[in-house]
Length: 172
Image: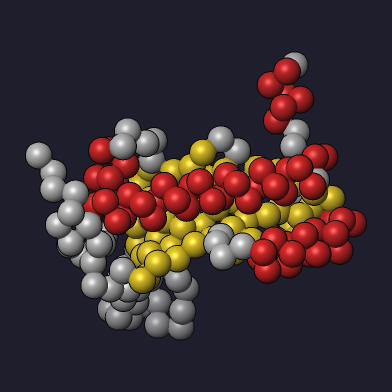
């Protein structure tokens, strides 16, 4: 039986173990090392592993910094908005970040496959884990992150209902 209260170093494998315990869907993904000038040398960084999970319409990936001291959860929302709403989105993001402790909401304007600019929203949370965490603590971080992501994007969906296109697809 797994002891949920033993403090151990945080690793992506322990996060996967937690997902198994709570029966959450997840994938372990190898990320390419960051390109740098010394890419050909033996000192180039190795590929890193991240854990990808999520809730409906929100993809979440969890990552440890290079030192293993900070665990971050990054969320990407499925909803998108046209770039001409950037001023309104920026104001909403600033207001929501001011009003809540976590997560931190952000946005990015990018071109879609057709060359149209659109706004993508994301959110993140982080926790210092250098001293280790128990599985119970790790579980609380993951579940509270997923909950806070769902809550903040629900607020965004209420303010920008035109971003929610999946309801129309599911009804068709």
